[in-house]
Length: 382
Image 1 (tube, rainbow, N blue to C red):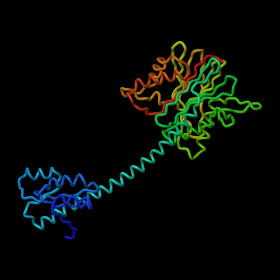
Image 2: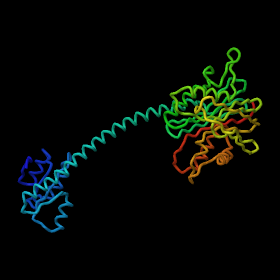
Image 3: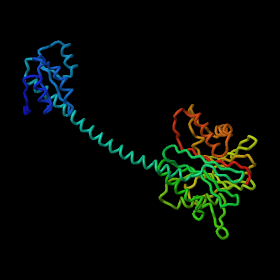
Image 4: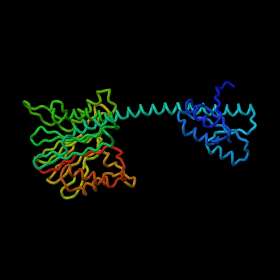
């Protein structure tokens, strides 16, 4: 039938031959001097690991229980003596089909293993890059607490993954005037993080000439532009660049630490929250359009006045839309509740306490669905 056949007089001799050159198929008697056919099959399975060997037992046994014992012992098929040549060729052909499928499956598994190893290497490389990107993004918020006389700013940034699309920050040209913002880029991951890096340069706390919220006054002095003008300048830059498909929401304010006056603009961002020293709370603003969706948009500013002990919070929707243990969202009312429960500490400590209280209401070990960020102004005078 075209097969290369090697014969062995005993099971022990067969084992030695199989160790030197493992066969594809073995046809063995059941009862033999010394080792039986079942014992040969089990020994062969233990020693030959390079590929699967199809094993056919020859037997004069016809009892169903004996045949089952042979199959349980590792045999793949059996033939009842006397053996018909046609039946033998048919059983070998059946074994050949199974071996062919086994070889194909082995090749596919090997290819899959190689592909998984390659993907694992790529994942490790990407993971290292993302860890480094996280460090770079964290450097955009180098200080979490800023003190201006009796007033303090605290910053919180908690990405849902390695990197995120939220950003908070502040800058000052001096004279107790402080610009501060919270923004949230649409989408997640690398593209959102890249845009936050660009926006951080547009709102740089150190390079005033590059900061769109600054304008040069006399000599080398700079002043803060009106909040609505800042939103419109950022929108002009976003919509003129055809390489950017993302947009972002933002709350931006200019605080006068002498008077407590804060002038703000809301661009699709959650409503700023004011916690008064007397325990009352109010949300400010009327929404507004996100930045980068349409050209030539106009925004309106609004204003509030803080008294000593008041807190003004800008935050991303990852905070109010965070999933709690019962499946509901925190919502603005829940934010007020958590903020009141987190009244201890100052600035960054207040925000850390607020985030910890939030984590206690989430399902244990549940990841964040979205980035969480916030910036708080604790007003205490200039």
